[in-house]
Amino acid sequence: MYFVLLVTGVLTVCAGALFFTAQRGSSIETLVDEIWWAITTMTTVGYGDIAPVTPEKDMKEQIDELRREVPHLRRALTHEIASTMDGDEK
Image (cartoon, rainbow, N blue to C red; front, side, top):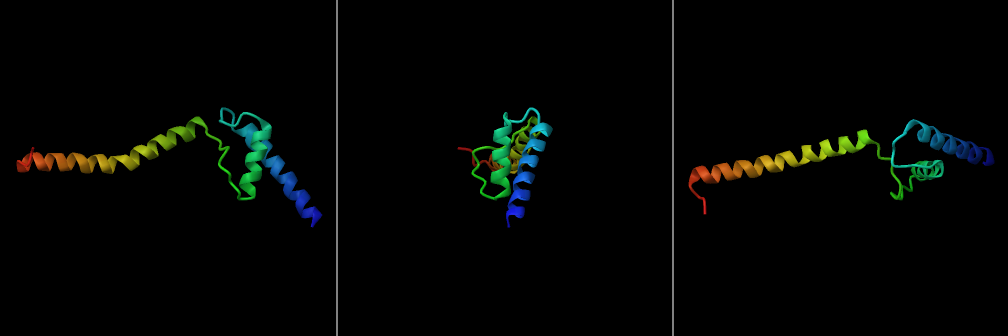
């Protein structure tokens, strides 16, 4: 049992250190924060107080937000055009 806990702890710290070195420019700036993120992620607690945000992820989130909003904008525009063509303009 202790062996499993030791291996899990070592893997968690190593994963945190690996992600810390791999994600330069992330919103997580210290090794301790990265290890905390790894612990909360691996234990599936996921408090949400720390999450790595890289410039690429931020741009992807903006593109996803735009993809979610386009159908609503298209629907509103189509409604406006159709109401203008019907003469229901008030």
